[in-house]
Amino acid sequence: MSETVADQPPAVSDEALLQRFLSSKAQPSGSQTLGFRMLSLSQADKRVEVAFEARADLLCNPMGQIQGGFVSAMLDECMSVAGVVASGMTCVMPTLEMKTSFFRPAMPGALRGVGKLVRWGKTIAFLEGELFDDQQRLLAKATATAMPTPFKAFRK
Image (cartoon, rainbow, N blue to C red; front, side):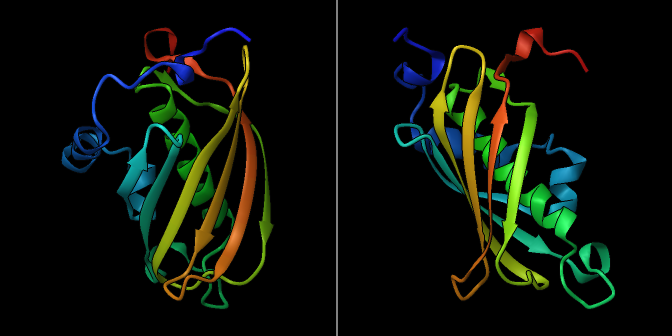
């Protein structure tokens, strides 16, 4: 198996990388809408843990629950950020396909997401994500395939 970006040793420490996320002034508007905040990351484990502050006035359906598309967006965010971290901050992770399983309703307030890079192939990355409520109950789980694309080659 050939060495990929995800197999190379990290250029910066986990703590330094976490501080980059926490001090960033250029958070995407979608991340802001979801209330995204990085909690922890492990480059060795290719894993991130994030918080979401799910606002009722932005994300709820008529039943007062977080609409499923926003739950999926939170999981997509966890997984893609895990892929970016695993790349050593050299690639974006456009999602090619994603499957979400919903286990219980997500309610407004604090939510926690975990994203993990499962495998990095020649052209495709495989990712997993889980979303938990403030009582640590699993709300939803997703799997995705993404196409790692170097930042310099990414075109908006």
